[in-house]
Image 1 (tube, rainbow, N blue to C red):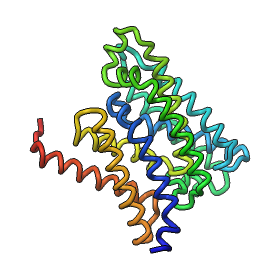
Image 2 (cartoon, rainbow, N blue to C red; image 1 turned 90 degrees about the vertical axis):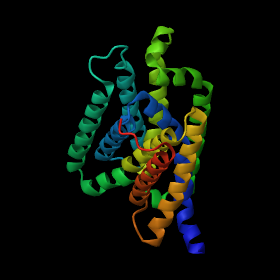
Image 3 (tube, rainbow, N blue to C red; image 1 turned 180 degrees about the vertical axis):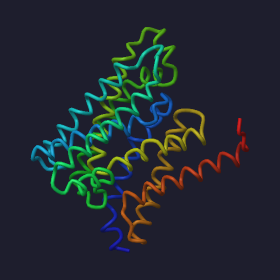
Image 4 (cartoon, helix red, strand yellow; image 1 turned 45 degrees about the vertical axis):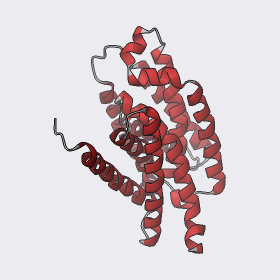
Length: 276
């Protein structure tokens, strides 16, 4: 038991921190209907990190992090600028294109670097099992600061996420608020991808939020459900990866899939199945 605690305490605490910020941001993403924005920004950040690696910086160095963050801000500006009151093309289509192009560009860059395949795998699954306490403390402080900022500006952000048409009509500067949302989102994504990888970050963002939507009505209760499901799934995923000697990140992602199925069955048991 002591061996389990010593080995898995750090990834478990890291998962709790990831759950705290991503469950909240995921509610905004689900309300906005831009489900893959996290995946797109995460891939943009990964592309920036691969460029830094090609230029001679370590994949997890401060220089690569700053390059990845810069690319994420560019992605945030693109997504904010393309939020139109009456869009010709759904924004989700643009988000998908950004993701596909960034993923392909990352593969091209890493094909020119030695051990590119291993680095690509690292970007996808992260290094959650080997995360250090110093890194956990750093992202914990960063996410706490971003959480405070979002608490202060929660009213306009929630108004835009829940009813963008009304926000435009009320005269809110929607694109500026969108840029602030995506920029702070970019800070979270860049740090999370470095630690947990693209796939796990996407799971932490979307699955707890979707579970909240399935099982609760108000924003506060959805957030509570998201935190609870994220925490329980982290416990189950980390424990399963230890007992069955499986990759931690991939195991937690699969555990989120199981969690979503359980929440869907709970909703069906509560409200019944309605295909319409």
